[in-house]
Length: 534
Image (cartoon, rainbow, N blue to C red; front, top):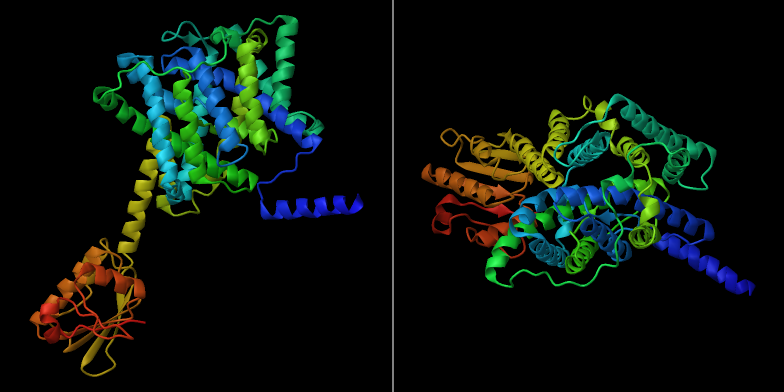
């Protein structure tokens, strides 16, 4: 028996080393994962109900989405520990569709949304999330933290939807006090014990005080009843024709894009916190399958939720078990425990979300503003503001575009030339910086065609020919020197530049071992443009 145990220990060590996402399921680990999942489930309830109201659908539509999307992505998603469900970013897009066409068209849209996400995963489009710069990520998390904070403000208001007003002084003070108590418990519990997750302890203690002393404060049940049955298979009752497709496709495309952007950014954020790797394409496919199934079971669709994912990670959730537990607990709340869950004070859940806000906001971004390039600081601020004013996907796209333009401008201004005229009768332009559409004009301005000697050498040792605009700039330069009856040579073009020049159809190979390229073949003999590739 002893050799078997030793072999198992070696295999466990090897598996952990080979797979950084691997976590051994000891009794202690299972307890942490289950309690983390329970904590997440409690936080999911008011969020799902609130987002259902935003989308103008029944609360169970949001709760079913949170259960189905959460369960499927927990089982097959790209990263263990992530939590998915109904989100506000998607809900705000659904409003107009539901108002004008009804909830059945929403279900059909969610199915198509899922299929588009599956296609995105199959074509590995998720890899493009790596193009999101770090300043955009900082602005994203800062904006998200503010959005989560602002979303909790509705819990401090009373009255019917659309006509809510702030609470009166007495109830407001009581609500704020219970919220602060929850936050204090979450902050102080880890200093005492780690037996149960701090957020769960905060919710449990405050709920016990409110229920035990009969304190009159808003509770989960005041939002809506969460009692219901199992979700049932349901084919969306929307005509299966091109007219329906023309209506739902634009919504499905937007929802799919928003859902994937938020999910993949959450994937990266959780990965940074846990030090694990995740599969972007795998997450796209998981989100797609989850939404497709959700549409057939009467759910509003969903994506990764950064707030709940942060709760899970902070509570110790590191495996798929926590996400599965959260989804199953949510279903149990709907089926058998609605009466108990509806008694939980909203102040306790608001306190948990406020702690998520504190943990999500990148406070260090405030201290590095003066140390980083001005454009990066402006991108952080821009993405934060756009996230708050519009939605997460728009903010990320705007941030990436601005960052890309800034990068292109920076590179465009970098191109210059060091000139060598030591050899009589020739002049060497040693180009430094990339040659592409942004720097093509600056490249042309480097040369003095009229005053240059008969032999001009352009050395690309410290440069790269990147695109068609660069080829056009080289050809235009060749034409100028041809008109002046002078010889132009190109040197040190890299092999990938050779391929690019060949594909352009503008150059020919003049040697086998060390290719010589000639621009504009019809006048190559006169201009004598040669490329010495190295």
